[in-house]
Amino acid sequence: MSWEIERIGDVAVVRMNSNPMNVMGEGFFSDLNEAFTTLENDYAESPVVLTSSERAFSAGLDLKYHLSLFTTGDEEEIWQWYERFRGALLRVFTYERPVVAAVNGHAIAGGLILALCCDYRVCVDSGARFGLNEITIGFPIPSAIAQIVLYVLGTAIAQQVMTTGFLYEPRDAVRLGFFDESNEADKLLSHCVEFAGQYGPSLIPSYAFSKRALRREVVANIEGACAEVDRELPKILRSPGVLESLRALVETLGKKKK
Image (tube, rainbow, N blue to C red; front, side, top):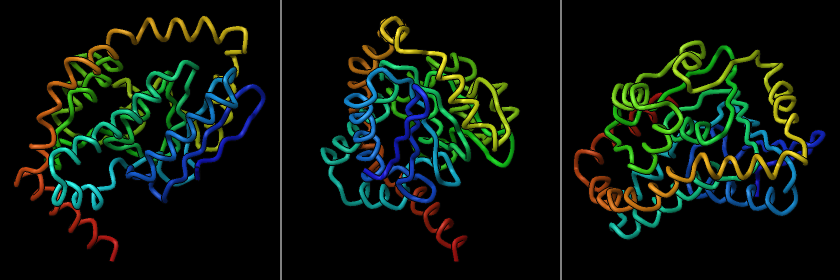
């Protein structure tokens, strides 16, 4: 596991560092699952602060890796990938401890979804952008992921941000409900640790019960009806239109790096 876990008081601070932009590939998913297994085993009574030691919180899926997967993989391989992706996000969404996101940089597409899986979210107040831009790059939003966005943001805002694909500055991201508040970069982590620290060990059992109760219906929906809908996803991800859009974006990003 490359992610760092540090105990600050009663709080477990998890720093994501899978790669410079914390793009999501198999290594990222593996790091996430290992980190949350460690939390369950070694920090069972601790609230969690999830942040990044890199310049972005997470820039979303590793497009180059996934373009290759969707081009060469068959539908079953892509379905298995999707189950790993969905499972990693649900690992955070259903974790039965307070999880506070200290979003210190860009959180885009899957990176913002990861933040939305956390219970309380604080973003840096400048120098970062946030949004669900999947639709603008021709990438379908799975039903299970849409359910998480709907749960957190409500129907009207969720529809707005998922169908426009706009990226937002911190002030607007807070207004839309992506985040509960913003803070200065040099105060962000300490503020989140202080906030998480109010949930001492004696409060954890009640918090866990309440969190299960709040999220029970959406989790059941994700594991039931959404799974049936999302069975169409591999076929869509292998379609010429999606592959063409992803290929063009990967080429554009490659040129910008030169």
